[in-house]
Image (cartoon, rainbow, N blue to C red; front, side, top):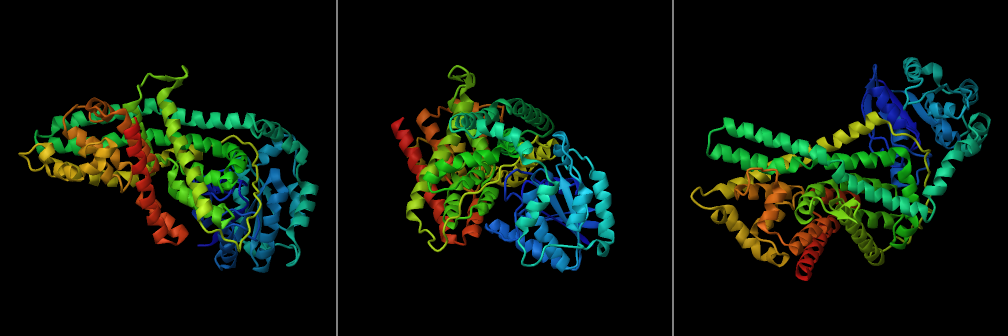
Length: 604
């Protein structure tokens, strides 16, 4: 199958155009380095390959080096029919630097080139126009205007793309810059002749930036946005959580009615609904978190937040680019560690990767939600306005961030710096403010929930069934005298300083594979204790059991700090190339979490 290569700088709308052409919905974000992997999809009889975004063919970061190598190798392949270069119509000069370099390379390899002039809707919105015919003649390759977001001109573009890919030899560039000629002067000349008046483009953006990037107003807005983000995890997700809980409860009653009394009914009630049920009820919170972060990404605010965070993060030996991996880490540490590749300094990149696990990822959400519901009254208010549970949620995330900064400062002073490579200046493109594209955003939200379930459900199922078997047998014994109770009593002395009994010790032990297992394990344990027929009301069972404030607070802080994710350890090993460093971090964070939990329990 012949291939069409898609190249372009970050924020050019390349990934969204790929989605529209192939029907695949890949992630779209307004910051560099999001498209680390090569994406593929089919359009008509051609395979479209979405290559990583880069600004030039001289990569500075590790991510850009990967992109440059992919572009150069892909263009040389015999099955490449067309090189599709996506340009940002609102930032023509910056887009053309890469475009001219790719065109030169394609011409040398006798490959056809097509320029896609994206965001034409924004050009028309401000009353401007770009002469694509004249630009095409000057470039020596066809140029087609479109908007991947509004679909304006997309059909015509697709037809032209397929026509050119079908007869590629007719569309090899008629001209290109010379091998030794820099692309910047030519791109500046073309943008001056055909591009938009930057004063018009930046007028509205600068007026908003003066507010968002101001030292005082910007800081207040940033903290408010972060606070509302975590408030909404409770308030917006509550109706969805209630719906999931009602569905699980109703389904459990139906299953109990049609299964024979005894071991079968006990298995479904305690192992299945008590374990998986108490875990699934928290999935809506993960989806809400993904939705709000997606809004911030697609609107262009995240890049501004990274710029604002550069100065304070520099104090801790980090870069403003560390903000993006840190925020991504609140969804999952694995892509966040990959996003750290965009940090130019090897030392800052390593420090960022080692502290990302302290960001409260989505796997911690079920644990946080459960323990906050136990410790904080549902109707309590913070400052008489905000939901106190939401404020507690924000506090836990803030504690994780503070811990990451403290550890960063320590690592910055103790890790050996690479003196052979000097730090590069912090440079970050501020994308144009745009309305999010709702279709891929909602797919991203749904996908976050499905991926979380697929990744966690098998582990939780196996752990829940294992705990149930250990707790159910021998049949003649009580839970305390069962196989599980015997194991719990052996390890109970380790957790007594935390103010916890053997049941919590077993749940914590099981959750060292993955944090979210804690809720399913504890749900199974308390379900077998027979406190309440409502198996998804785990918070009420724990509350009735008498968990003290000190033990509960110490336990939730334990989960803020502890690195209980084997997949994250594997990713750290792959990125750092050190098995000792990855597992050493696993042990260090576990010991630190234990010390904090014991101290909190003793103090409160």
